[in-house]
Length: 265
Image (tube, rainbow, N blue to C red; front, side, top):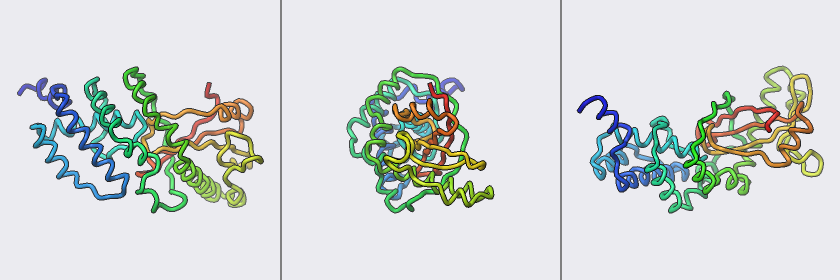
């Protein structure tokens, strides 16, 4: 096999629709177990996919990486390996869309996973840099809109609540670590009727300047899409000095966040 043909096989251009259904279905089955807090035997799953599809390990891993890339852009959690591959094509997108449409329980678990019910009230967070923007893909944009994981998570309130509590704990620890435990003790969840709409957490800069934080939480990766509400956008316009966004992601894994500040429009 030449180098070019090996690469074509590795990235999965020769996969049939039936074979794609097998590898996508197996990937989602593993993800369902992860969300439920159940152990996953990756080796057994991979052997099964190789046996059913007739593919060797290299193309199976490459295709799993493409599935990871697609799910991360949709806003769903992913398996931790292999890393994402951005060579996915319309056939894979169709296979992922069909498989997700057939698994409403998976979509529900992605915003209220059993695996997180044993988590502490606040999850320790690690700060990261904002991600680089990904080129727009109109085919994928339609799938993102169809499943709309951001709206599902916001409407459920489980993830938003856990994310906000985790940001409160992180902000209090940050201030204490920088010599301002007095301010750290004042960090709190926003109060309805007392704090401006669009604010989830009230915190402070080291100079005691107020910080009005909107918290956006997902089990997905840093690339998971989200949007700001009208109240959040208005607060960003009216109080750009104080308003900030904390995007909490990978809450079931490494639990990271990044910061954003106005302007947003």
